[in-house]
Length: 250
Ligand SMILES: N[C@@H]1[C@@H](O)[C@H](O)[C@@H](COP(=O)(O)O)O[C@@H]1O
Image (cartoon, helix red, strand yellow):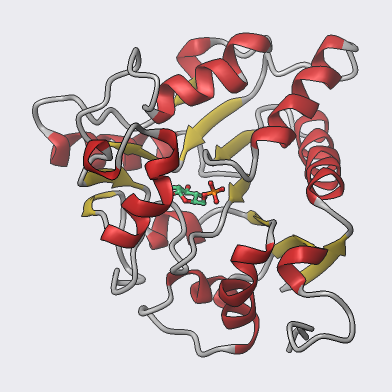
């Protein structure tokens, strides 16, 4: 794993933006795996700016998002499809038909999971997967205890995850109890992974990822088994020099 330490959220986003731009301009049919949450918001703003400046086109790009809440459709402002449409897709030239977010409102969710896996396989897999890090080490919505062999599946969300995401809702009670998520196995099949970590509240999780055991109890630890992972972490997540939060990679 390659750890890139940067000053702040802005620098993290700028670095990630450069990596995505390189990938998008160097491949004829790039496939990006995308994440939602606060972490990549600025990154998406920067990508939109680059598109507006005409330094990048997304017309040849295909995307797959990591996850979606069960029960929230594309017009619900807290659905991840809505998030992606409003934070990125509608502001760049990507054809809607090439943007994929699991559908959490279909009747047969198991079938949707299977279909999502097939779609990813049919385009030859994900070239670059962007990930955020959950406070409990979740990636996508793969909560602690998820088998590393899991493909796209339906999850019961941990209360701690619902609480962490309640800031986007009126109350924690409104946060759905289930989600569809790419599985760990699906994520690990990506050719390259970029994990973005920002803010002091993530420092414990980052430290455990770097120095703890590889264990299903801490899903992000599986990234240590992947041959091409870059972590971009800001100073607050890494811990300031001279404090006990200083981290090291192995
Ligand atoms: N399902 C999402 C993840 O895809 C995201 O990466 C993570 C961190 O979110 P944030 O970036 O808001 O801290 O938690 C959420 O629950």
